[in-house]
Image (cartoon, rainbow, N blue to C red; front, side, top):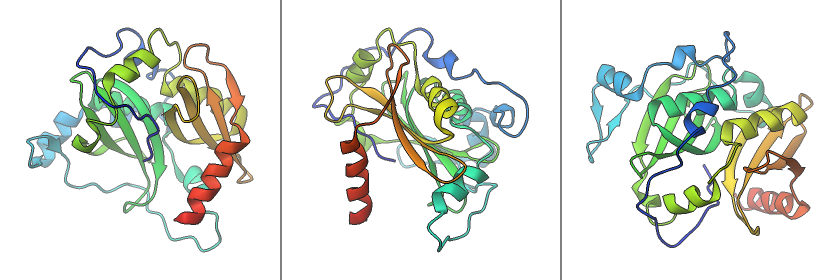
Amino acid sequence: MKRHIVIATAAAAALIAGGTATAVAVNGNSGPGSTQSGAQTSAQLAAQNAGTDHAGTSTLQDGRSSIRMQDDDNGQEDLREANAAKVSAPDAAAAALKAVPGTVTGLDLDADRPGLVWEADVLGKDGKWHEVTLDAGNARVLNQHIDHEDDDDHGQGYVRNELKGAKTDAAAAARTASAAHGTVTSVDLDDDHRAKAVWEVETLTKDGKEHKVLVDPQSGKLTAAPAQDQDDDDNDGADD
């Protein structure tokens, strides 16, 4: 999953206090999109699967999503993924926070693995970056690990400062964007070419049209992403 926030050092201070962990739990409707089936913590699931990485961090070994995805030769892969996902971005954020309390800074719907998953970036209350992989069919935690490579590049102090007093977290930004532009497929805290960080949210409408919008963490206001952002994405795709 891409991350945009880049700083030189990481501050060793506490994360945001307050509503970050609770706000993402809203949208608790029962049904396929609910996080009830993902209510187990990563620790409980890790105990069931008895996996430990080289650093002693609990991980899960099955790593298999309940939703299998086939290769798409018609260029409609993103739309198929969005239609297949039973877990919404806000519900994925809530499930990630049950596994790792802290602040969700990124979500990405991804079928690169054997099946459809949500990849969540969480800056934990332990001051470490965690990557949590969730089944897009039922929000079950499939895998989680500490991302040591990002320790120097993505500091908790920066996130704390950018989201200080923020009323809009990743889940709320996703709900705002979804209400306006369809199914959310990606959420990132982004500071590229901007004076302050915003939530950058990518969505797909039912006809497969992609939208990129920005949501202000402080006000919750939604605006269209500048054309330059879309051009950058197109160029990135051409380089792949």
